[in-house]
Length: 85
Image (cartoon, rainbow, N blue to C red):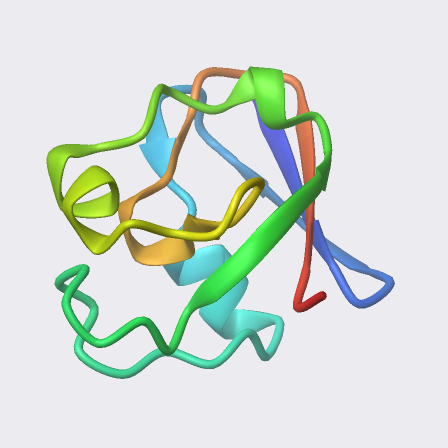
């Protein structure tokens, strides 16, 4: 099992799962959930190496360095902490 953290809360999710539902449950804002709007742009401040590589939608979005779209992130395992920095 993997662990997602956001604003001092954490949720356990299955390895290989999308982090969106857990992040949304902890209060990270979401809009379209399709990688188009950028509302869920966040920073994996710890454990970024536990995420799958950026998706085509994230690459097309031309995100600032270190940013990810949480709606597109899949956790391989381990722990990841997101912030809105």
